[in-house]
Amino acid sequence: MNVAVIEAYSGLAHRVLAGPARLGRTRLVAVDGPSGAGKSRFAARLADALAAHAGGVRPPLVHTDDLLDGWDDQLSFWTRLEEQVLGPLRAGRVGGYRRYSWVRRRFLDRVVPVPAGPVLIVEGVSAARAAVRPELTLSVLVTAPAELRLRRALARDGEQILPELRRWHAGEQAHFAADGTAAAVDLVVDGAPDLPHDGDRYYVRAGRRSGSGDVAG
Image (cartoon, rainbow, N blue to C red; front, side):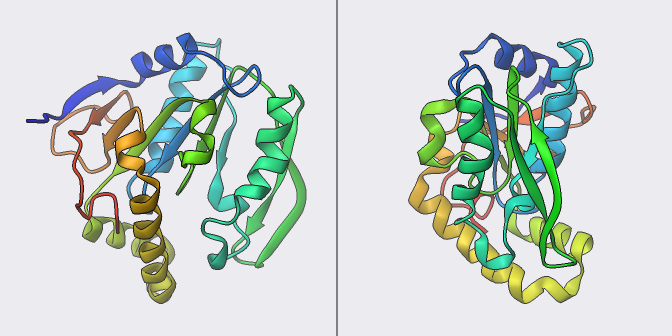
């Protein structure tokens, strides 16, 4: 029987920094999971913990939503991530990307630099996909019940996105099933835990579950 366990972000940060750099000289951390599961919050708190271990220097955090060319680019954005961020860092060079504006429906002009430092966190749906696994120092899957994830997304972005969101969830479900993400990651995190804990300092490691709406929306 799998039992949920409370673990410290500081311990996970130490694990990352002690791990091998597989993307050139950079330790690549992927925070994957379906929309509304709590990926962004987890990634931000891990980045804060890593900064505490590095004299306050926060590692770059790339959100894949910033690289999507609209709703239809759910999974095909990867070439953009590879060419603009992963490829340069692999070669020890500074990467950089332009953020997509979901309001203006175009990529903004300003380039966001991504230095080739000790750690890079990439957060978003399919961030831990099979193509990048050999270069990952740590892969994380954040999960939560499908109904809760839907409520979170609508509260954040409004009811008007519901048709696109349902299509998005279907795409997530197909991807996670084909990719085998849940079985391949190093860590599964409960994005809606019942265990009382200090969410700024601790996360809840979940027991692995397959075939549930927690991963596939």
